[in-house]
Image (cartoon, rainbow, N blue to C red; front, side, top):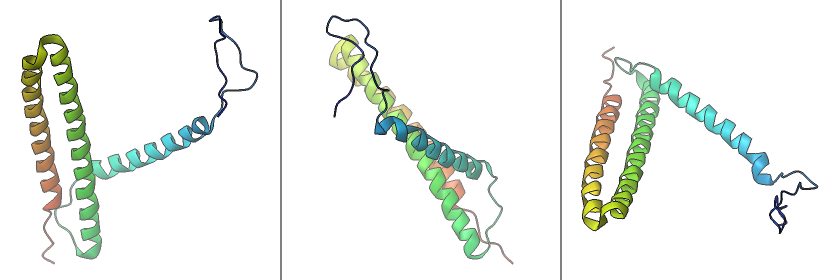
Length: 134
């Protein structure tokens, strides 16, 4: 693939003769639009209040969708917390060696566990909507 360069050999800025357009730069806005639509729908579903009870198949499908949404959100938050833990451990290793890294890892592990338990409680709450008596 021939990609135009912006700098010449002597380090001066060179203006390319054709625009810097690749298939990636054309696809990226559409991917972002799709992601925003999915995120917006997730927020709408997540912000709706939990119904007091569910009726029939439609209620079961809604319950499954809400529970899945909550589980995905929990997984994402827990994953982010895990990445933060790894980053803090590496930073601790750079600053103070393996002992510092071990301490940072233990602190981060507790934060990740707390985030996971909070998310699990939210997911359980979404999953335990009773069936209506009528």
